[in-house]
Each structure stands twice: as structure tokens, then as C-alpha cells.
Image (cartoon, helix red, strand yellow):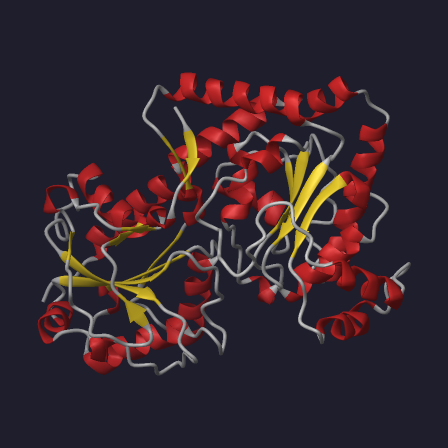
Length: 433
């Protein structure tokens, strides 16, 4: 087995057919528009087709078809954004007669679907009402793992008894794929490779902290770790800032202990800091291996895309969470509140053997990062007392957890099992005209 970082086709698949025409995907049904686009397949639609093959006892919906729209990034979404107007007449009539499903695909995003900026539940129900489409014909999919809870709360709040179908899953597990091989033998080979590479490449940098896009809280976090007493133990990456950003940061962090405004100016002048790739304008999320970073360090601070609380409506993991898992490396996540412990809910084992996660549920993003950094500093202090061999042994000290998480990732166990339950439930509830 050769582990590799997939190209963009991992999430936007160009030529993967629906097996045996079960749950057939319809092509060329959307007119050009700023909200949704068609593509041959995504990870979700490929999984959907496979779920119908894997569940041959489906009765009511086994021969249905689906139209598909992958979200774009228009200037504005509203609760009354009319997306069904862009469907061809035949497809819309099929939806109205309960013969065709519509997949609203946000599977690479972790948006909160009830906000003013992304009111996806509002607009889907609005479109159903306007065009007389039963909500059962809608499949909303996202990478926000709270969306089943969100739709339940939304329906209760609005007195809705006929719900759209909602499926959330950690789609970025599929960023990393592997060639065919016997699972256990292949996993053992990958584990031995990670261990040997670390023995050969570890040169005193304990951890990495990567930040390629200047998100507000992530920028502050990178400044804090760069200004910490363990900065010399880290591989840190960050792009240069907009000229106004240092002043904004000073306002936000002025109450933090040990932060001097001059330190922010000095850090700003040192940017960009580069340990991976110098081209910050390109999105490398679904491209290019980061193996050399994992191989020379002991752990990683994962700087996730979203760190806000958002009233508890979001839990999102990008490819950044799964890269250290792929390389058998312990990690500490700076993400949504509870992001480290939430991994247990999707089948992973967490890293308490390595880190203190008492910071994990703190709602304020900066306060949470400060406590995270304390945990990292304490870990680095402990590592300082070890020999080179002991430090590497520390990284790999709980082999069972590292290998378990690798296997969960490559099989996408949580997503596959959950989707099987969804299609069975859709079949049971489906109403025909």
C-alpha cells in the first residue's frame, strides 16, 4: 500500500459511475448560475450510489434518480434564494412527483446552516414550498458534523413535521487514499515507514504549526506561538499580513499577559514564515504531500479552518486534522470548542496519553488557544528532559491509538455506516404520488 495525498479529484470525482445504475445521477440538469454547479461526482454522490448497491433490500427508492448541485460562493445567500429556477423542467417535475431527489451538496464546508450568511435550511424549505416539492426529495449534505442536530432543532422551532434529509460526514477523510493491499499488512508497512522516517529526520523540532490562509483567530494564534518560549521548538508557517492587521491584532490582544505591541510589529516584519510551500495564493488543501513536516517532528498543532463557537452549531474537520493521522502522529487541535474530544463520536481515539485537553471546551477562541499553548509548553518541557531516542518513543508510545485512527480514517467507517442508515430511513419514509 502506498499512502498518498489525493488531487482535487478526491473530493470532486471526474469519472466515477453509479454502479448498476442504482440511484442514478442525472447530468446537465442545472443552468449556469451563481449558487450551484454541476460536476461529475463528489465523494458524497459516489458514496450515495454505493450505499444503494450495498443495501439491496431498498424497496421504494431503489430505482430513483437524483440531481446534484455543488455549492458555489456567490456574493450573498438569502432565506429566499431561488435555486430550483435553474433546474430543467423535466427534473423539476420529477422532483414534484417524488421520482427525483435533489442533492444540495456542501460536503466540503462546515458552515452553520441557520446563520444570516448561510441560511441553507430556510432556502431549501422555501424552494420546496414555492415549487411544491416534498421535503423528503431533498438531501442536504455537509461536513458540519452538527447538522443532524441543527435540522432537528430547526424543525422543532418551526413546527416542521416533514423534514428534508440531512447527512453530515467528515469528507476530508477521503483526501488521503491508498493503493489496494491487505489492510493490516499495509497499515503495518505505513507505520514502520513513519517510525523509521522520524528516527532518521527528527532534528530537535518538536512540533509544527501551519497556517496558510490569514484567518483572524488563526493569525493571532500563530503570533502567540511564535512569541512563546517554545517557538524555537516549532516549524511555523504563516503568510504575510494585510498592512492593517497588526493594528487590529493589537486591539484584540492588548489585554493578554506578556504581549507587547512591539512584539506584534516584529513578528509582522518577519513574515512570511515558510516551512511547506512559498506560494500562499494557491490552495494546497487537496494537493501535495506534507510528509516531510510530519516525519521530522513529534506532534502537530492542527490549526483548523473554524475555531468559533457559533452557538454550538458547528463541528468541522478539514484535511488538516487527517494529515497527522495518516502519518501516525499525535496532534492537538485548535478548532471548534470540543474538537479534540468530539473525535470519539466519529470513531477515533483521542490523544490524552500525550496532552492535557482541559482547554478543549473553552468558548472564547483566544482564551482557548492560550490554554492550548500552555499544554504544548508543558509537553515541550517534558520532552526537554528526554534523550533523542526517548523523544521518538514518546511520539509512538501508544501504537494502538495511532494505528486504530489510521484504519478508521482509510475506511471512513463512521460515514459509510451512517449513510447506510440514512438511505434505509429514506426508503421507509418515502411517500409516492
